[in-house]
Image (cartoon, rainbow, N blue to C red; front, side, top):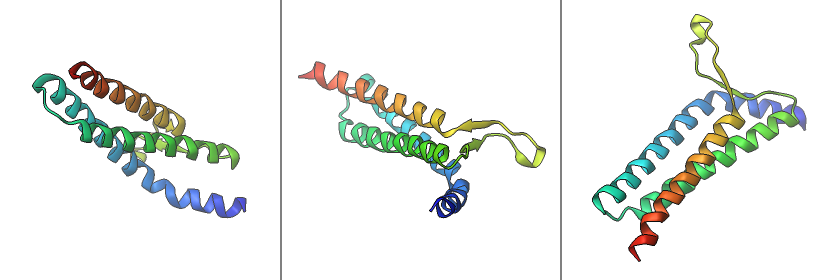
Length: 119
């Protein structure tokens, strides 16, 4: 059982960095929607809710992957350095997941604050 989970984790590792950058793009879109809602009094509630949900799912996924890595005695990380130049700037999944969780909470609070004051 553990061997198959380790093989699955090793197969997924190359796709973690693109998934992380996709989630960062969703957070940026959410921030732009919140700024647009606050500055231009536009109605971007559906987009903000969508952004919060996707960001929260990414946070849960990275935190769960960290938990699975700890269970398998592995340390799942994303390398932000250039491995061809032997630069290794490793960031643990729990740090990425925590960042997404905080971003989702902030987006939810800021997106709701304008909605509550309008009613």
